[in-house]
Image 1 (cartoon, rainbow, N blue to C red):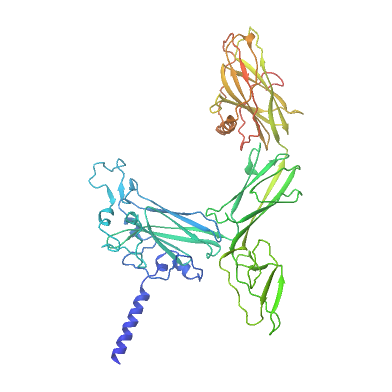
Image 2: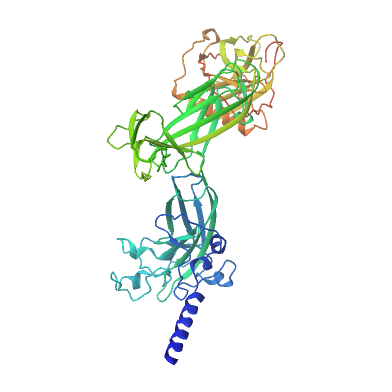
Length: 589
């Protein structure tokens, strides 16, 4: 009797001791909150955070504990935790952890932490260049025969892959009431499948330990949120030629608007799916369905429009079990032929199409075939489909809406004529050229001339001014040039649009009687350079006008040749037209 009582007390003490030990959910900052919820969905390869934690081998410090300040030699280690979320349910979400060491410390090729020579107060002749040297004692450890602690907090041994000796940090991840543990270097990457993760905003936490001889020491802790969604994550980029600022959603009439859909799918989960894009541009043109993520639409009316898009993804997946409705008979077996698809609902509100059940072999197609299904009333069983099968799909959707305004704008600019201005012999000055510029669309309110070097890379001068009111888009710009080669860009703009024309100008010295004008096309390779140049020049907002030449300079006996071309369909995002144009006569600016 006494022995039975003693045994019971020993068992009680043992159980109490076990219950008093820490568990993973007690160590993680967000563990207690997650433990209070019923996380019934298991993440493949993860373990429940109700498992015991070896606190003797892995000291557990909460955030704010003073011991964090002295857990690393020479400063504090910071862990940066990021993810590529949002992730569509069924895809993978990837997390990356990067450790930032104190100044003048780095990880070498062997995985040891060393001082950077020549950095700060670190002497190049220092007898000990190591902050932490694991190599000196890991080399004496063979697989399964290590004298130092080589287990995870739950007791599982470290993996012994080819590079395991250089992996001196232990990473403990925790989310959804489960944990995952791995060893690595100063960075670690982890991907998990979201099939069994609840849709919504979730929290993941990581605690990083450095290897020790007798025990391992925490060095950093970080947490981050990630999003799992049942709707396709994407964004739409709207652009238009000659649109001054695409971010204001104001676009030009009679000019195509490009709609570019960018789906966020870093794990390529949707690569095997069939995507359809259903557009409603809001102008009464009807629905436009396409398999191309890039489309364009031209608005021929002015006003405000509501643009709507629905994306549908048919993702090949396993056929779900189907519960059949019994036929109201008890003794006969009934055969029936059906041509309709069986549809079941999932937890996200989407559907999985299933091919009709059959007792024999039948072909699966994306459309439901006519098949014969045999079943009896009692008893019957529910078939289970677990592998992807042709004709079985998981459907996911994505939705987009935006408001746009369509206004009149400048559609194109062209330099229709260039002429030299004859200067009397009594006057001295540089070569003057008149650029006659025309445009299509609305009338411009501002004009800018940007002069660059012959490569169209370095801006030399920019002048801008308001364009006088007129009933037609035709104006003349007069400019003075020294001998040399120049890239001339002329822009006309109004409140919503900005269009560009470009030309190359070459001035050479010679008798004035030999002045001529000729025209050639600018090489196409310069088109992009011109666009970049003009954007940079407008962005810099020149504070002071610096003319290329002074019209009063004494220069006799010179001639010039002009090489001319036009560049169209170049657009800009902002307008910085502030400086005045040169004005000399009426109708010439």
